[in-house]
Length: 92
Image 1 (spheres, rainbow, N blue to C red):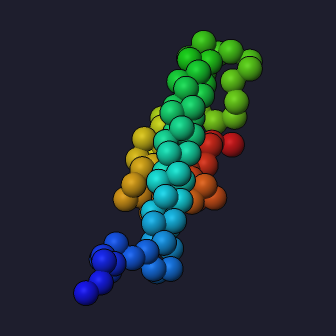
Image 2: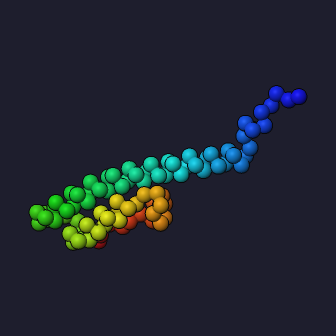
Image 3: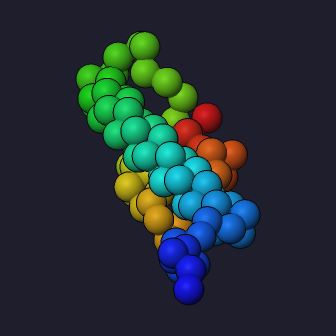
């Protein structure tokens, strides 16, 4: 009779899966923060455009609104998420 609970054995495969899930969660958290900050930038840009402020970045109001829609959709299930290089791109 053995006192070892073989179901509790952590194999390299299980450890790899746990590490992978932890990394995915960390990347998703990072992207959620990016999304939150980017939404603030977008709001500021839309106000600057509305006010004809010379400090406004490139792009029309419509381009910034379309970008806002893309940023809002940047979450789990979006194509490329959570790869930072596949994020929506700001108007230029």
